Image (tube, rainbow, N blue to C red):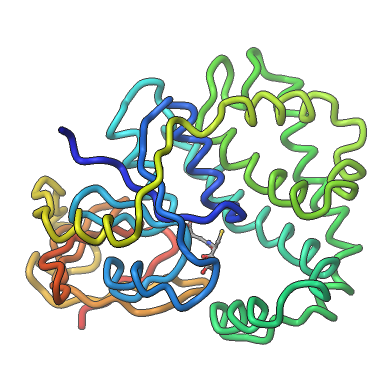
Length: 305
Ligand SMILES: N[C@@H](CCC(=O)N[C@@H](CS)C(=O)NCC(=O)O)C(=O)O
């Protein structure tokens, strides 16, 4: 039996929805581990060495942190239909950072008061600064124009495109990434989403097409079973180190990796490979043994320890 693709995620997570849609594009069978939407995450942290964000993917003893490496891995697992090439990644970056940062304050400015305190406290710990609902509420109105401007780019791309998708005749990462923010706003504030998409007829039709891509074929897996999978596997050995990488570290050197935006928990390990798109580090986890952790380069700081 081939080692399953495991996704650690929760239903309401927008970044997870982007990955689930990508799994739908591929029609892949995968194992679904439901994780808490806030700390503590006692069965996830042993796999990630401290990285706490959602989602995380796992293949055996290889752990993929951040949707950039998760999506690249999905494309590697099943190359057709191709999900991402070239500047699809730049569209993904825009959706993850700029479009997402416009979406979040709009949502929490309007629903923050009815959001559980424990969740708000957790997000303060995640970002390292106050989760200021009052400031978000004040920003929410002006940001709606910015949100509609960005949704308008999707609309004009679809109007100009040949084919039903942002990249033309087949769905790609661009569709999944752009959709994530619309999905997040719509599931939180359906009336507002309708208002902000008013007249964007191509986007509304495209949104239904993206939703219809589905999520592939998930079957549930317990978090304990996922830990057992990691314990019983050996990390793979085919990640290529680029000797001219500006990090200037060699395989075996002690390094640590952290996100540069939020959830900046430091993960320590020994360098396995650093190349333009990925850094892989090895760590030893009590009870699980050797694990390889994969992080993207864009958005992460890698430092020699
Ligand atoms: N750059 C990360 C961002 C992931 C992210 O921000 N995920 C949110 C949930 S959608 C998160 O981690 N929230 C805190 C949590 O789930 O504990 C990625 O692409 O995976």
